[in-house]
Image (cartoon, rainbow, N blue to C red; front, side, top):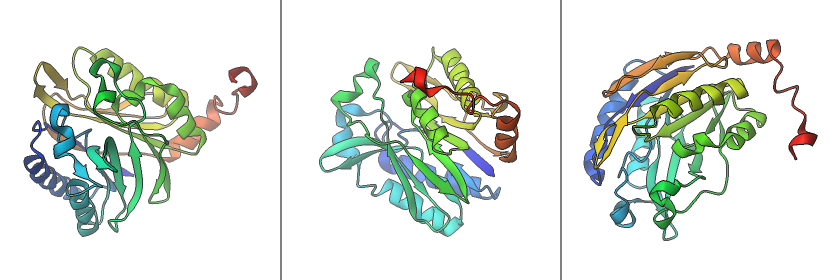
Length: 259
């Protein structure tokens, strides 16, 4: 499976400008014929939390609706990062996943809200984990801060995920945890981790990029720069089964002790 990572800067609170930019980047990425394109977290509004209720998508429109149309036009699977999305009067940090026909195959709202930013004052937490199929490959999806909670990725793995996608906005000074956590989630679950982080500055926050693709052994097979870039990475999915046969961590679990 060929995955195109779109590492980009985001305009704070400017939904139209962000959508125009994302469309151009998706079209550019599609020229390299990937199977999947993935965007970063909250790309439609970024963290304009003070006005997020006014500028968020309404039930996925217009931002992710346009991405779905692009998936159909370009015949490519797209994980639409995540967006601020209002449903039934509440705003969620939500990722939509589209197949090559432009159909919504998954929707995931971030479960773990970031306490340091008091996200719960502005956003509603998701209540369900996310598993889906793309081109007959079982995939999981988490968002940014979710990466710090190993229970979620383990559950997705036990449900059958071979790839876990992670759209993020992860800033300095937390580069070291970003690197370690991505590798740890890959190693402990023997899955591919595909994490897409944004770049640029926003207020006092500086986002370092360093998007990562990590294989089931924890080896980094792609690490982004600190600038905008598009990178297509080829995942050898047979490696997931091979690693699990040789190192039987998942089979050797002893659940009675964990309960």
